[in-house]
Structures are given as C-alpha cells and as structure tokens.
Image (cartoon, rainbow over all chains, first blue to last red; front, top):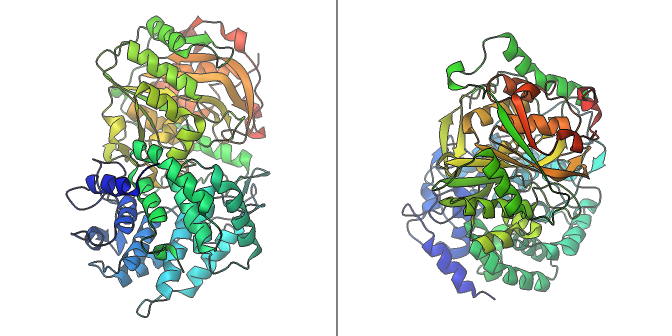
Length: 284
Length: 338
C-alpha cells in the first residue's frame, strides 16, 4: 500500500518551473493536470498558475498547441471556484466564453438513435457534442450558477442535461459519444459515467440517473486505473453511496498509477482519497 | 483552424453508410482528377516491396523469435536507433480482438532489444478510451512493459509540435504531432488487422490515427473524421513515414470493426518496410481489393506499392491465409474476385 504522502511528493517533484504541471513529469504544463494537481495540493502554492493561465477570447489555451479544449476549460472553472482564485481575465469572462461555445449540430441520423440537434459541448471548436466535455461544462455551469456575481444561461444547462439523458446507454451509464451505433447498443464506461453523474447529482430522481448509479456501483470495482477509480469514488460519494471497497481498490492501484507517472491520474487519486475538502470541488 | 475544403463527414452521424463510404472517396477521387496534393519529388515508390507472412497459429508462439526472423529476412537494422512501437489500443473487452495482442508487442520489444536498438518506446493515443492506465493494466501490456523495462508514452497527452504535412489531402496544411513520434528514429506500426465500418480495413496505415493528440484535437480525433478518414490516413502516413509494419493477424476481426466486430482466426504476422504493401497484402488476405479501397489506391500512387507485381511475398504463401472476411454492407462491393 502506498502512503498518500508519496503522491503529494511525486506531484511536487513533477511541478514545472512555470508553476504548472504536464501530463508526465518533464512535459510542458497543461491545463488538465494543473487543475487536478492544484485541487489535490490546495492553493497554498505560489505562483497560482491557474490565475495566469494563457487565455484568448476568454478561453484558456492548451499551452503548447495554443488552442482551447472546452472540457479542460470547464475543469479550470471548477478548480478556480473551489480554490477561490480569480483568473486575470476574470472568472466571469471565462464563464461567458464557455457558455458561448457549442458543439456542432448535425442533421438527423439514419444510423443511430439520438437527437443530433442538441448542441451541448464538444472537445474542441467545430466538432460534435460529446459526453465528457458536456458533463464537465454542465458541472461548472451549475456550480457557478449558484454564485451571486455569475451570469449563467439556464438554456445551456437544460440542453446539456437533455443531451446527456439522450446519450445514456440503454442499461444505464455512458459511452463516450453515442449510446448506439449501426443497430448495436454500445457499452457504458466507468469514467464517463462517473463524470456524467457528477454533473447530474441534482437530478437523482431521473430514471437514467438511477440506472447509471446502479451501473457504477456494480462495475467500478472492476476498474484498474487511478483515474477511473478516483472519478467513481467521487461520483458515488456525491450520491451518498458506500465507497469503502472502492477506496481500498484505489489504494491498491496506486503503485501502478505512480509507476506510470501519469500526473492527472495521481492527482485525481490523491484528491479522491485525501478528502482535504470532502470533494467540495465536484459537489453541487 | 483552417476551414474545411471538403464536406463535413462526421463518423456515422449524418449520412447513410453507403453515402458515407461514397463520400469518403470523393476527396481522393478529386485529387486524382487534379494536381495531387503533395510534391512528387518528396516521394518515390520502391521498385519492389517485400512482405513477410509469418505463421502464428496461436498466441503461444515465441513472437520474439518470429519477429526477429522477420527483421533479419527484411534486412532491418536498428542498432543504436530510437525505436517507437505504435500498437493499436482502443478499448478492452475480454474475448474480443480489438487491440494488438500484448504478446506480439512484447515479442517485438524482445526482437528489437536483441537487434541492438538504443531505446524502445511503446506509444499510443487511443481515439476511444483515453484512460491508457486502464488499457495497459486490463490488456496485460503493463506487466510486459515492466518485465522489459520499456517506457509507455500516452500520445494523447504528449508534448506536441506543429509540423507541415507532407501531403495535404485533408487541407489542414499542418498538424500538431507528439514529439515522441517526431523524435524517434524508427517508427513501427503494430496494428491489429480488422475490418472497419468506415474505412473498409484498418491495419498499418489507419493505425496512425493514434498519433494525433486528443488533448489538442479532442476525441475520437473528430477533426480527422471531418477532413475525411481517407485523407487523414494519407496525410499522416506521408508525414510520419513509418519504417516498418508488424501486423497482428493471428486473431483478426471481421464484421462491424474496429470495436464491435467478431474475432476471426487468421494465423499470421505480416511484416514489411513498406506499410502500404503490408496493408495491400492484408487487404487481399481478407478478401478485399486494395485497388478499390480509396486510401490504399491513392497510397499506391506515391507512398508504397499495392501492385502485386511489385510486391515480393516471402514466408508463407498468401493463398494459405486467403479468406473472405465479413464486412459491413457498404464494403461488400469492394470484395476481390478470386
């Protein structure tokens, strides 16, 4: 079993001179690992790199490509709120930009059963709405909607919820994009289901949500990945389910996670296990 | 982002299958009618391409020996070079044939270590399940990497550099590609041989979708689908210029690949320094005509050989493995007449 302090030490050693974190030690700072490491370690570190993250038109940029990734932008809004940080462009500006971007609509499909008109969030500009970016964006919007000085569009929340419900797999849970294709029902996955459930934790009465929680309780313990286990742990906790078994499996997974040196996975694991803020960052 | 020169072809959400496959071919056909989107002097077809078909009736064979034999027969030299092995890892489901078998990857690692490679890296950027820790542990590849002390690089998350495309079928002009790929001396495509519901077949060439970084382009690499799957396959191969193909066709996949198809025993490993010739041979083995698959037909004009007269078959005879794999309806007209 790995001492959680080792995870923190790994993350501190992996920090770049610019204050951020790459996906692996020694790699350029990127938004997703920096968000999760900031959440795992808290905001005591200076400089507060998230506040000065490169930004264009209100959208945070992947540093080496110079392009925005909407899922990671949404994660940054979640982290900024949780850590009580203010981006130099203004958090309201970042929130406004997230609400302006939409997945590309498509005409009705002849080969799968879904509503292609729903414009939620895509990963990047000019592509179709997908489950992960929609779920992270929905969670961020719902969280910021509760703040006094934020302006959120209710319609974006409604459409994102409709899209996630539309893409829910027949037996509960979520695949990545489609729930069915070419006449076959697609499989749900643990990480996507956990993220979608986090964004729908205020909609527990929906039958799709109930089926998906049951799927996650049933399947999460068979995962062997820090990311999947950490996300599942946070999601099940948000729904008040027991996470004791999952916690033990995640602890057992940590040597592998550390050995692979995946910063986001280590940071998510530390955040999920450390319970420094009792998962307030992903709560509604 | 550059505007699209072609119509938006999302993967399976806009057109019927027949329309979609026909539409995929359009840019390639258009390229055939006009000036080709690459500089002729950058490419030259090999006078002759050797494709080895090595027997592997099951995954119990010693793949280190088998692939080592293939390297020697092909005259591959990697001493002192940085070798990048690019397997195909998409999703894990027990009893399926979705991913390159870890035993084949481990065998390749052993063979390249014996051949004196200075460094070996296994690298993949899945277009579907982006959690590579899950894929590595569930497929068992993680244990092999530990045994051989070989590093894994998640290409979805690697540092990137923008590079100009050596051909421009997509109209993108440039792509951000992982530095681990760009700085390797010797790139090996290690796909699983599968039928593919949008491209007809996926093997050594289509495998390079996994080099496009998801953190930059999103999942499932939709930018490539929007600019045409066929076009993207051509641009990626023209730009990366892989040096070797090692195709896992011990248990292949037929039907609704690359994920939902059925395993089908094929019983061989294909190796070639010409990835186009490797794919053309695999295509013929599974009963499809490479000259009718748009990306292979176009690749045969500038990247490698698909003409059987210019492909020297070594090892086992193609006839030994020839079969008619089930394909989705849209690709049934592409079948070979034997």
